[in-house]
Amino acid sequence: MKRIVVLEPGYAHYLEENAVLAAFSPQFTVVPRDASVEQRLTALAQADALMIREAPLTASDINAMDKCQVIVRYGVGVDNVDLPAAKAKGIYVANVPDYGSEDVAEHALALLLSATRRITSRNSQVHQGQWNIGQAEPMFRLSGKVLGIVGFGRIARCLATKSRGIGFRTILVCDPLLDDAAAQAAGVQKVSLEQLCCEADLISLHVPLSSSTRHLIGKTELASMKPTTVLVNTSRGGLIDESALYDALVAKQLFAAGLDVFEQEPVKADNPLLRLSNVICTDHTAWFTEESVTELQRKAAQEVLRVFEGNKPLNWVNP
Image 1: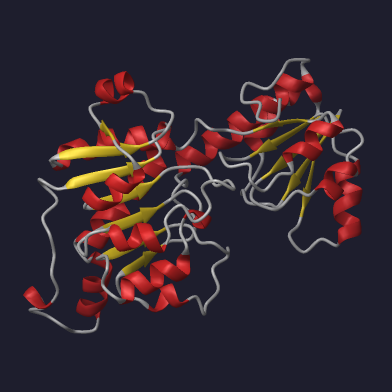
Image 2: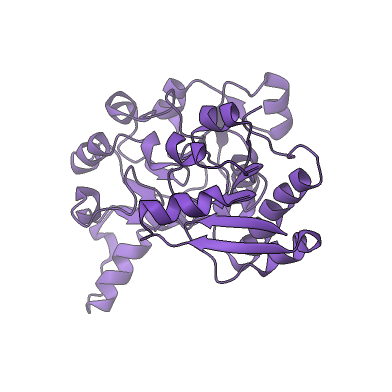
């Protein structure tokens, strides 16, 4: 029997995990969000494996885990896990980087289109009985415009593929890991962040959050954007300086923003960005479809299985 601790519940059931790990007679303990520190540490001490979503996992938590063989992040980003502490403890940390790429790319595209065509504000106005809104607010054709993508991993590549049918004049990509040959093969143009911010009509962010990418988009970058630019973020809220973004939107330095993520989550009700009609917000659900949940739970459990069977994780992030 293996004890699987799930920190921060978020799924209707764990049938996928049970099926994958059936050979080890898994016993699941789900730690609720309102658990006391004592309850949390007691559960962690019993874990043979820990499966975690977005809750912070500190060095103190990890030091309490004397049996744990592997920590698996349900998702891509591992900025909520103290990786050095896990490494010092001899615990594998793995993530699931190859799920939901289609879903996040579709959500980014939906935010981009909704902001450009003012779908949410028009929907609200029509529900309020308004009509013949017509040319009261500007809108811009996407065909012939420039799409800018920051980061060019799996999700960004999906977005580039899905966007081609729109008829963008070109797709600019800022990614230091992208070489010229790969850019040419993908049909994109590699540029600096500075050039992308200046030239792109629509910008979508697809990079992980780290000390080097925090506030990657700040006052300087926002000031260089066109007043018709739409900025979309489906990665991590900390990539954007929200205070600077608010000021830029109010000053009409850019057209609109589509945000699935925020610097602080859940987003506070008094966040000034929520008061702006040219900001479209969703609740960090770009990853979610019925298909992606099944895929995520299965692939996360497969990483646990690899370790239980004496192998290294496929997506090992703290070697």
